[in-house]
Length: 183
Image (cartoon, rainbow, N blue to C red; front, side, top):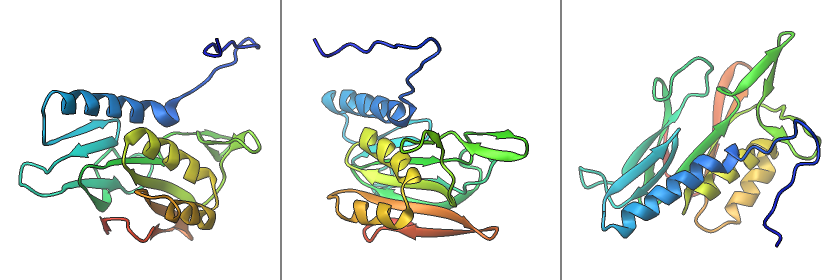
């Protein structure tokens, strides 16, 4: 029927982490909206979707964490995005990585070579109409070259992105033209 996935090797796994939290956020969002709620924010593990305004009657203000290992979510905010009826997801290598022989390896795998990504990108935040797309695109943009990623996002309606990169021990950010962020 085309809806079956069969693993062919012992120990083989599929990991849908790049879209799972975003999908979950979207499902809760749909449930709340279908039950008449007009102002809310759904968040699962840092993936967010908003509807209406916050309790002050303004756009939702969502923090983007400083991509520094060891910090808890919300402990050190690097920038703040304003959302209204939008979703936001951040992906990066500063929380999920492993270290072997003094070298850090990202949990994000480049599908072109099957190896962990190696770049100066610390995190990418994406704003999109739904959270599953924001979640998937944030992960994909970690794999892509920043210039190519920015060109891609600028070509997509309703999508914006914000990169934080490590350069010579400092952090630098880059945003698409319509990214509603203050830093």
